[in-house]
Length: 113
Image 1 (tube, helix red, strand yellow):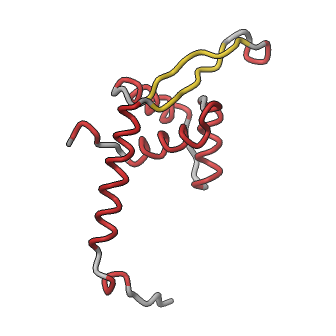
Image 2 (image 1 turned 90 degrees about the vertical axis):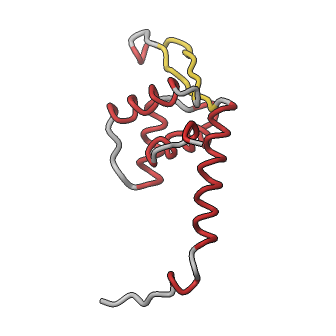
Image 3 (image 1 turned 120 degrees about the horizontal axis):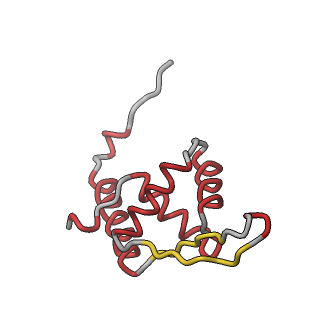
């Protein structure tokens, strides 16, 4: 099912859109990912991923109200589509199956150092 494949960053972006629900716009998504994953996210990489996910039909965006603080530009809010939900479910299913398939002994390692 290649049509449901998500890259790691795409999956993180989509999950974050879900976490933020009605408040998922560029800056809030970037901040949430950085806070949760403790890693920097460039605006360009995030915007590219959002555009790519919207082009795939996994996300839908709409404009919010214009504000003086944004020089009259509206925020662009994102929501997960039904197709996006299926893509996330597919990704989770694959990961769950892989985790269940790892023999217990494979993760029974001693940390040295």
